Structures are given as structure tokens and as C-alpha cells.
Image 1: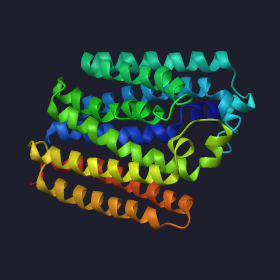
Image 2: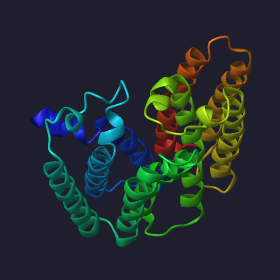
Image 3: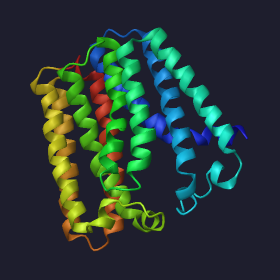
Image 4: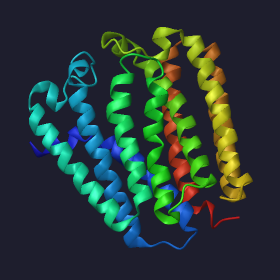
Length: 284
């Protein structure tokens, strides 16, 4: 049963977002790391994200029955009841909020609250009705890196805005790639993802456009003095490699296979981004 509650929090999402939160925190720290504050940030952020994922599981329990990769989730199988999940999610949220307000600052808590509302309420409903659900979800997904940054700075400045833009722009090709190679599952669940409502070619064009914008955004972090040239070289080269792979999609004979490659490369990009953010303010 403990394992079921653990998986109800979608740990993969938690770990991925904590990597970006750590990157934002370490970038803002400029080499002067307050380890207690760092641990509190990760703990509070992870609990709020876990809570949001539990509530999302509750909302999605109907459509999860229709998708191959989600039909074994605890709420679909009846291993965890609706009231139990809601209670669990509420406790996680309260614990996370208490840690953030006690050890970080109100700005970081506010970012967490906004992200929670967007992910649970706006995205939870929007993804069922519009192809724009993806962009709504990306807003919530960009919050952890900003929260990590504002924990240190206690202000939402240009650096925070650029980090937000980078994560939003990264998520769009990432999620469109998932939508392409899991197209049949989204069709079965009647979720109007872009390749279903338009076409594969249109989705590929969108992917390429977002990657171009992503490269511009990562370069802006150096242009405005928030990261060094080591960061810039690494991220621009990775962005160009991602873009090259994106253009290959227009000649792909197997869209699903190409989309999986795009998805996997996007993981390399975000992991590399988090690493170079962590050292970007102390390296030339």
C-alpha cells in the first residue's frame, strides 16, 4: 500500500522538477550556497508538487482507464479510494506550504500556490477541451526553476523571467513529442492534443519553432549577465543539435520513432541545462 501512495505522487515528475529547482537555486546562489535553505526549498517544493500530482490523479481517474500507460494506476484499480487520495494530497500540500513559508519566503510560496492552481484546476480541465492545454501545463512546469531562484533572491527579476521562458519553451517540444508517439492513447482518452486536432506536420513545425525560441531564451541568460559563456556554449550547441533532430522529422518515415528520439533528447537537454545553471554563475 505504501508503494501505491508513493506512485500516486508521480515521483518521476517530482524528481524532474527538483532538478530544475536545484538549477535555479544554485544559479541565484552564485557559489555561496546555504545548504539548509537549499534542502528546505527542495523539500517544500517536492511536497507541493506531490500534492498537485495526487489531485491530478484524482481528476484524471476516468481518462486514465482509457490509456494503456495509466490504466494500472492505484485509483483506477481501486487500490486507493477518492477520499483517501484527497486527504493524502491535502496533507502533502499543507506540509509543503508550511516548509516554504517557514524557511524560504512568501514569494516562493506564492509561486508554488499559483503553479498548484494552474496544474490542478486550469490544466486539469483545459487539457480535455483544447490543444492549448499543453501550454497551460508548461506554465506550472516552469514554476520550480523560478521558485528555486526566488528562494535565494526573494524577487522576481529579469533572471527569473528568462528562466521561466526557457522552461516553458523546452516543455512544448518535449510534450508534443510525447503526444506524437502516444497518439493512439490520447485518441482513446479523447484528449485533443495538437497532432490529433491538426496534423503531424503542423506539430513538427511547432516543435521546430519552439526549439528556435528556446535557443534564443537560453542565450538571453548570458546576454543579460546571469550566466557565463561556458553555459552559453553548452546550451546553444545542445539547442542546435536538438533543432537538427527536429528538422529530420520532416523526412521521417516513422513519426513515432522520430518523436521518441526527440523526447529522449529533450531529457538530455533539460538535465544538461540544470547542471550548467548550477555552475553557470561561477564559470566564465
